[in-house]
Length: 410
Image (cartoon, rainbow, N blue to C red; front, side, top):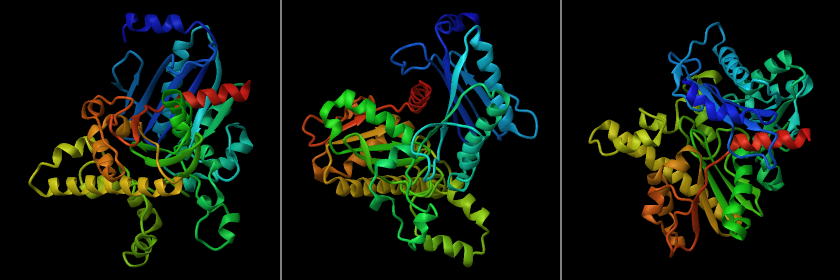
């Protein structure tokens, strides 16, 4: 990293206290610093970056103004080593400034936490009980909270829940068709990607006005994927349920699947719960059906191949799109119509081809797409004659978390 690459950012880093946001996944940690001294809180971070490939053979560390570089994560716990690397980077850049707080994206708040909360040992113990509901993300966010509570007990740790935004959905949407005692045991539909949808509930009315207060469906399409039906900028229904396995087909996750398949794998194939969990979370979805990749951008060029690999890529993408179309159709029925369809997250924001194929499934509703706007990832990609507005809105989960921390501590 050159001195000149730091100059502008470092000058900005002298203004006020900073909110550090940590977004911890199973193999990566994203981090961002927001300036708490500005009102309103800027949506762009002062500085951000990530460690990725944690646990793999070639982890990398990257930050603002810097190309990702290989990083050594020594010791028996590479995740803890990655946290220490981020801590070192943050401390090196703080200078005379102080941290205001640390905001953590926590996937699951269970049936107890419906808004962001300052974490302490009691809260941490509660959140650990939800690890089986979100094993890909929950333990890693909690590891970061626990480490910082120990190292910096004076520094506020704020847990921001992906489940919280969906607290507004009706009871009938939360119920599972299980024995009535299941509800009391916490077995219900929670919904996820709430920080992303919370951001959309703010950004869409600013961009689309009153239209965004109507019947809206947001498609969060990334490595994890879900849909949220909104009205009055509140969650009405969503595709993920009790766990982050439900709903849409994803990069490596199944999405909704006949529970009889799970029973078959357990009783007939004699797979252990651990092996079944590994299959459902890590070996299925686009990766499983294609046999080659979890990413549409990799699979799309493979569709033209006249071999088994090409056939599997075509099958994977066809099923992926079909599941999105089917679930959008279900949400339209729940909402009683549709005024605005929005794509967000990695695939949603950047894959014009996937957006085109999904929207083609709703030609009967009068949706048309402006090809040039779609290729350019424009804010509005629907054609002038389209009966429904279709848009692309980048998500900003980190800003929501920082905003929540600032509001809670104020």
